[in-house]
Amino acid sequence: MSSKCQNYFRTDPKQKIQQRLIQLLHADNADIHLIDGFPIDVCLRTRARKSKIFKGEAAHGYCASKDKYFYGFQGHLLVDARGIPVNFTLTAANIDERDAAYDMIESIEGLMLGDKGYIRPQFKEDCQAVGINLQTPLRKNMKYERPKSFFRLIMRVRRRIETVTGQLAERFEIEKCRCRDIWHMTSIITRKLLAHNIGSFFNIKAGRPAIQFENLISAE
Image (cartoon, rainbow, N blue to C red; front, side):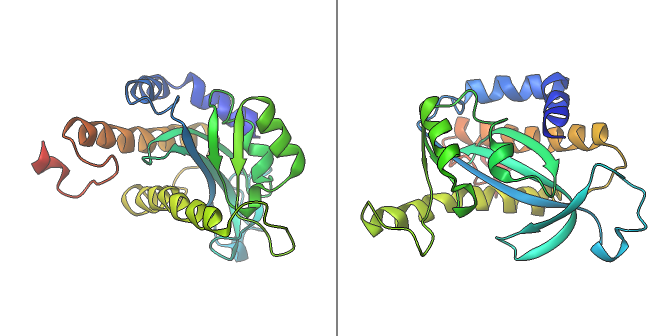
């Protein structure tokens, strides 16, 4: 599922424009990246059994950050420290976000911050093998090898990707599915991410924070 969707993103002409913007903004070779997932509902869970939309593709899943069970897909987003989306992949809701992450981290290096859902020794080792320093908050049963202030800093920096996801949900309804097949879904999501990054491009050119979109038109 993940690889199939990722291929759609790579062949979409809009994605080529997106990649060029990412290069112009130097977001792909940034020192710090943030990674997170979010739910995309296909329909209410109570209607999932009777729904024929995305039959065999959508699945039941759980979103820990929103503490909700849902039926549909999960979007997996990678942004730089400024909040500029660098990569994205789509999976069924029941796919582990650590498995989905492999599709997004091929071209980055440096520090990558994730939440507790990305804790897995093998995943951390695989990240290290390609030059990525994965850092996450610790679970209660894990020992702190670094000062707790370091993990508080991680949590503070990680809020940036939560802000970006919130903006994409509020302005573009990225967490809602309004189509009936994967091709259209990936095309729509690509368009929304591109619109977000065009706004970031104009902001940076105007000397403003990348994701401060209020009064963007007047700033130009």
